[in-house]
Image (spheres, rainbow, N blue to C red):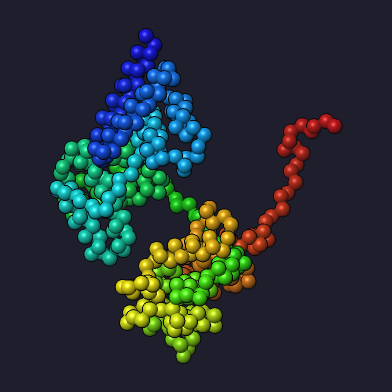
Length: 418
């Protein structure tokens, strides 16, 4: 009798869970996988003779799958079954699950989709950056998907209930994602009212969440670690010659990946020993000295490593077609040499080209370089951006430490008798 009650209870939870999965943007193949996973859990429950599906049973089921192994060593299918078990518990507890929507292309249709596209164009004409516009499209596509699942097809159907329902559905996203989504939706609703597409400004319904972006400590490497990194490059071949120059430009001059990839012959003024360019990020013009080791490395690459090409860009791919190097490639290059140099703890630190830029700031701070000078070297628009690097100057921070004053005996109440 108890077993029957337990099976019915689990079947009810499983049925509600599968109904929920069919309401969210899951493919049929994904739903089929979840059904197989639920069948596995059902068999486990019967064998275990549990009274209900709970966190304890979920953990025991996962332990049975792992069987003493590490998560990274189990098969893809076993990982999927663990995901099913945790998602089922999540749905049973909260009525929803967290999931990600992966899209290569946004296809928003109907009146609402067309209006979102018009909003995106409206922002583009007002010179918002492409990153901001792309972000708006991502966040509003979630809103579009929610409206589609709710059967809302026109702008006139928007109301308080629909908006609150969407806001509540964001609970499993990160705080930053929720904040950006709410901001995008608030601006979109204001746009609908200002452009006379909706008769009421509903943006007031999207309350501000009070989110503040937490400042992260910049990743940096010591001067010795940077030297080990540079020494690990084999400069006896074209790849090594090219990689060495790019690493030097980041480590010695603090150039960003976008500026290194976009560096042209026209940016090098040899008779003045200067590199002059307009930064892609800030659009600010900077002039940097061609240090002797940097200049020698550039010449070595151009004479003995760079493919013969009419491209105006200095750094090219190794094999035809000899296109300019892409920024993600630089990230991989730095990671490769950090590993090759045997530098510790890179798994818990950022290990892209930007980390070398941070490291240069740290080295300059150790040399007591004034903040405005560091700001000029890194090409910051103001010293406010450079101030974040003060947090990695540990010797200077230690000098700011204050003595802890002794506490009055009354703070402890009655004295402890000896």
